[in-house]
Length: 120
Image (tube, rainbow, N blue to C red; front, side):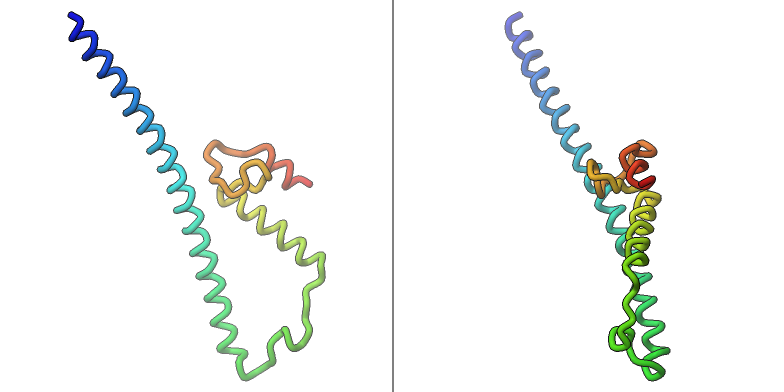
């Protein structure tokens, strides 16, 4: 009888360890999914930038000088607007932009912190 109780106790301990291992695996899978999504979006954006940079560069290479030489700098208001647009785009792609969870994948719908940041 004592052997059975010890065996059940060992089995219970083992199940507790397996449960903890499953929890760790679940967290790792979540991190990998977030990283995968972030890398997909980054890759997509880099492809767009590369395409945008290579196509006009070939067409304008002999026609005009670069914008940096001309001194064409966008006004500060335009740069601020672009930053806001980038954050809004990130939020709509499913990422947090709030200071609490910045960069993490949104798993459960809208985030009140992010929405309050966007409304400012």
